[in-house]
Structure formats: C-alpha cells, structure tokens
Length: 339
Image (cartoon, rainbow, N blue to C red; front, side, top):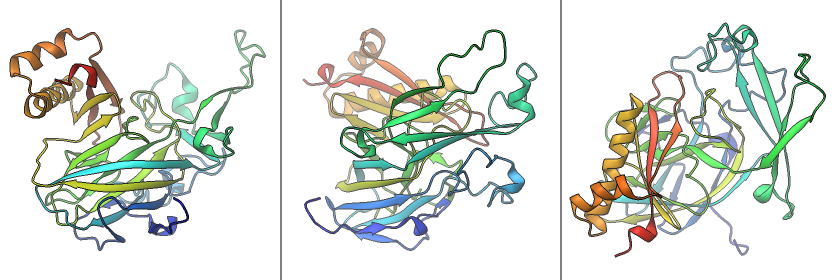
C-alpha cells in the first residue's frame, strides 16, 4: 500500500464466534480506508497435521453448543454508517497461509453415516494441503497440492501421487451485526451475511450488505484456499489468511439480502431450506435488483431470467451441518443489464 501503515487486527484478537451488536469495536475506520485482518482457520489453529483428527472431544470449544468454530475478526466500526444504509465491501487482497486442511469422519457431512464406504463413517481423516508460491513469490498466484492416498484395490494402480490447482481464496464467513439477535459464526445466516461460503466473495468483487446498527459493525473470517460448489463434506480447504479490505457506504439505501457485483456480472444471494426456496428467492432478489435499479419492467426481468442463455444459478453451500440453510446465487452478466 505504498508504505502506508494500515490499521489492523492481529490474529490473536480475531477470535470472535458470534455476530454480536454488543461487542466493542476492535477498529474504527473511515469510508474508503484500507485496513488489514489476520484471520484464523475454521478450527482456530487446531488442525496442523494429519494426526489432528476431528474428534469432538479433542477439539477446543466443542464442549459448547453450538461449538466454537469459524472465528471471525471484528467488529469494525465504519464512521458515518447508520441503520438503513448499505455497506459496500471491497476485498483488496487475500494472502493464504502455507497450508490448508479438510477433516471428515463419523457423523460429519452427508457420507458420515453411510455403510457404502466404511472408511468415511468409521474413522476420522484429516488431509493437509501444502501451498507453494507462484511466479510472484507469494501465495497470490500460488498452487494447492492435494496428496493422493495409495490405493491397494485392483483399480488403484500406482498413478499420480498428487493433483494440484491454483489457489482460489475467498471469505467463507462475512457480515455485519444483525438487527437485534446474536447469531453464531458457525451457523448464523441472514440478509446481513454469516457463514455462507460463497466462492464469489473474493478479490475483485464487491459485496453489498444492509446495515442494522450505527457503524455497521462488520466481521470477517473463515478463509478458504479453494472450494467447489456446496462444500459437500462440511469443510473445504480451510486456512489462515491475511486479508485487506475497505468499506464504503451508500446512504439511505435498503436491499433485501446480500448482493455481489463482479466486474462483469450481478449476483443476488439467498439462504433457505429446501434448496428450491433458496434458488427461487435468490432469483426474485435478482429480479428486484433489475427492476429497482436498472430500469427493467417486472415482465422483462421475469422473462429475462428464463430465456437468457448466460443466466446462472450457483449452489454455494449445501452441506448437512447443524442449522445451516442452503445458499444459492442468481447471476446475470452486466452486458444484459446496461440500458
């Protein structure tokens, strides 16, 4: 940042487990000011090697209900933000740690009770993914290495020892303090944000959130080095990170739920169960965006989402974990929106 000293929250203070409007702010920032957060992984540092298993009795904080997982940094108080405004979050940079992890085992995720593949439901397994820097010498363009377990079955063969792909980090848990209630960083979800695991909450995109309290009271944590759709097992490539963020305000602007603006597309978000309700409501949110801000009639917006070949539905999170609802996004490219 050109030698400018940024305000920051160090990792040892990034250990909140709820979006709580009663928390004292850890930072106070001005609109447009870039600040830095050091985040823990979803286990608050518990998983360091394959020997660290997801056995609840061994994990710190898992004697609580709900467990203390998904630590977040915050709140950050944004000067000038008031109830009824809209928060604009710009993720400037996400630099992940030297490794990430995934943990599976009995009664974890949709395969945690299956007899079809006993290794998934009878024992706990942790996989560690090494990260290596890219051409820049940093993790900005680094690689994630997924080690392959030797398979003694007739079809296993020798084959490759690992597969790899570019690190594609995003923020899994992000939001502001909700209107009145306190919600946990593990299973809290709402129009204000929460544990949503949206791959598009990443560098280069803007996230819009409704503000419910003076100062917005913004929180962030639970970075993933990469993830496919749905976070099927209940964990993905969980990692620590250093994140640079800036916040802005749009005064007196109300939105029904989180929105995301990519350089070339608009995405409206919703979380609910069953999945079809999340998909339908996210699509209605997108239609509302087109109608209220981009000059579409209701008829044109309704017909557009059913005919445009580039309209997309994303299923960001659909895992069987606690009270989590399913997270869907409805996306339309901007080239169809500009009037």
